[in-house]
Image (cartoon, rainbow, N blue to C red):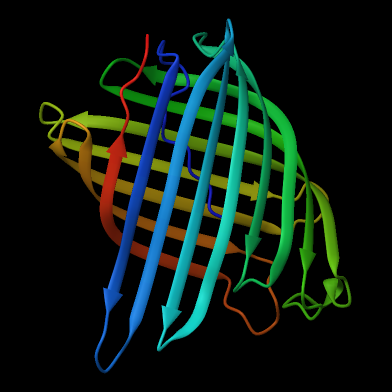
Length: 243
């Protein structure tokens, strides 16, 4: 599961949107295609409330054979996000071709603390708890205790650290999103992710983007590796925003 959320919900703007497209393509002796698309939208349905949704699609193929095709929908509802400390409710849905996950969903709640928040830079720490349901297509796992199960259910606790920084008079933008997500009942079932972005503004509405993503999941199908890395290049298209 790839988790991303780089629009700042504490802004006073009523509507915000971003589209990010990154990828890599090579042909010839070795044929490789990697493509990532992300949308990030937030709006204010009621006073002191912000709804934010991120939706992403990842596709990879090597030598014409599909290696990945993942869909992820992340949805957040924030209450009083202009405060230093504020609550949130979340719901996620995802699929993962390579991990052989037919369906995964989580829903839960927590709080966010704004460590830093100004017009140029922000840094936030969140703590949440979620119920997770995962349905696999295979039942042989790298941890024998889980063998034979098509579905795995657990409660999780998650610590998130997200930030965005404008450097050199907004000529360089650095973003990061990291989290660790252990099961509250099974210490051998946990995952973490680190997502780093470097953006260079090309135009008022367009940035060139380099993105590095590293993920780890302790519980996987027996023949799979636990860790993945992605380095992609592309563009971010930004909307502009209503007061």
